[in-house]
Image 1 (cartoon, protein in one colour):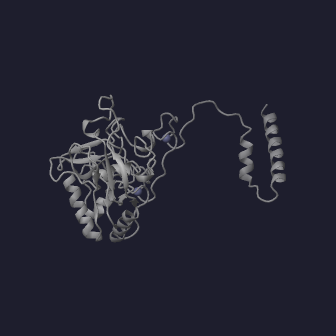
Image 2: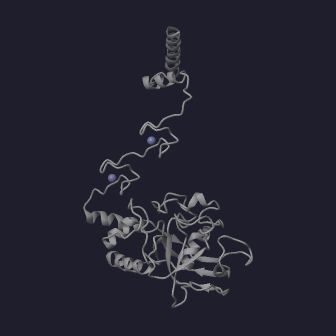
Image 3: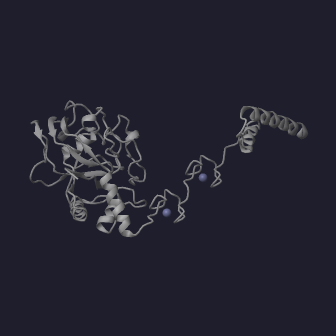
Length: 328
Ligand SMILES: [Zn+2]
Ligand SMILES: [Zn+2]
């Protein structure tokens, strides 16, 4: 039996070799031929095992596809705080790189007019429904810049010299657990450092951008009607994820729905139905607006119009920010 199957294998290989030689006059590697030979072997039916940890695929935490190891620190890429790419230059060069990257990540949003708020009947049962979202009104905005990404821990670290994040691991995760007040300090230091005029977006700018600006396709979430496409939400460990991994919205902005809640400039107040031009919210208040929802919430809290508001000193773990600017 063994002799027979060996013979069959040899025959098969011979035929394959001949075919391969005829098919391609010049460049058939022996590796390719060997691979073709393997196809004729009977396939095993037992549960496949992970080649790295030896566990069966269903038991392996990476489902058989372990991330590569960082060549510098030896940790797996997902555990390395630099995601496998440790900075090679001086600390100053690294800082310059991060600030340059911020500038390059600012997206211009053309001005326009949109309907702000939740287009719902007030009595409609709705998980994302809040009374302060339903007074829809026309808003007209001038153009502005907004960042593709939430402020990362590496950016905060480069500016402030510390990383106050509640959840750490990778420096490309959004800074989290920062109050509105702390974010203002960060922005003022960043502006001193760069000579630019970064700021928080106004609430209206945030919502216009989340809706995709003039390129809006009218999605419920920022960039999709399917929350899984665009948002980190209801994450079991409540840990924010590295920015920019899900699908961007119509303007190329990532994580506008989910990941962390983003502080906006405005004080919170109920909307009125009046049309507004470049609204900046009331001049005083007790709570600041934040938008976008966060990893600890379930579906229904991530709509482009969903509003949150918290005290400016609140540094709960899900608070972070995204930068905007009127000019660069
Ligand atoms: Zn494994
Ligand atoms: Zn590393």
